[in-house]
Image (cartoon, rainbow over all chains, first blue to last red; front, side):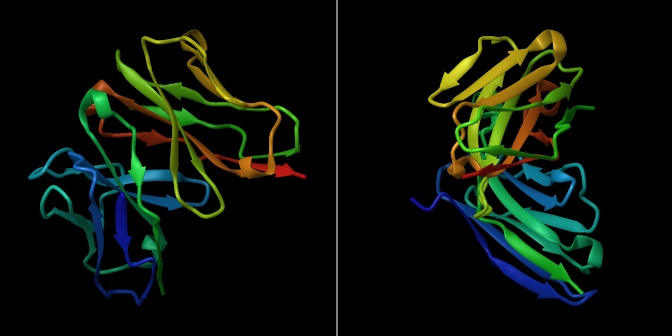
Length: 115
Length: 116
């Protein structure tokens, strides 16, 4: 059982380049999330999708776009990467709603460096 | 707005000592959930526990125990007889009904080092 799979694991970009982080879950979860983790900042929510067909901004959405392609997949796109977007990115999923509230299942993370 | 404060950024203990990780939260929601997550050196985040705001019973799971006190807005985590495998960053988190429970707010984490 793979759980949450995100790719790539590592990426180096130059300022201004674009890229898409891919995420897929096989747990039939309704909700999916993208977080970034920075030293001294904990995890901060970038975007989330409460259910298929919906997306909403989190705490730090600027510079990012997302697509909930189907129930399984939720991608994060950086259109024009900036050094401030150097971070570790985590995709997560949950059942959603009060019953599944906050019980997140995380992918293994993507370490992104923007030069 | 909701907020989670983990005042201890790093703690070091000698193996077999007990250690308590503090978590203080702020929320205006009437219904909310509190969580602890573990991030070992491998980097993956693992769910440990969820507590809802109506359940103030302490919980014990093996060497782990959690003390939820609504009166002090705290949800502390104690590891008894710590082991080297407990070395990790521990995150306290919160989600509430005003965000549809989807917006989970994390603290900055407490890095625990257990010395053999």
